[in-house]
Length: 142
Image (cartoon, rainbow, N blue to C red; front, side):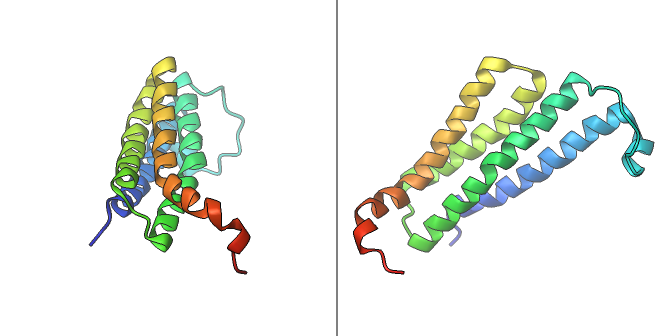
């Protein structure tokens, strides 16, 4: 049976493609298809604000996605899945789905709260693994 956390990870991969191609699309809209298919060696004018926001949203996603991958992998290794880890995974995914259009639209304060909600989701996934390991530092085997 597929765990919710693993399904969220798969959907996170889809969201990664959305970030990559969404950013490429707005960048190509500004610089043109010829630039997109070329060597991209020329000096370009400054990016439109939406291009910069999409690029920053993409960079932000790829800063946190590896942590989610590790969290889901650790849950699989330890089998410490719970209702809270499933809720955390869904919270992270929902926050990341909302984050991209909010950032692209330039909504500042809401964007920060949505980002923080995603971090809470990550902590909810990591917490069982971290708390299970707190008392084992003296007994870890190499």
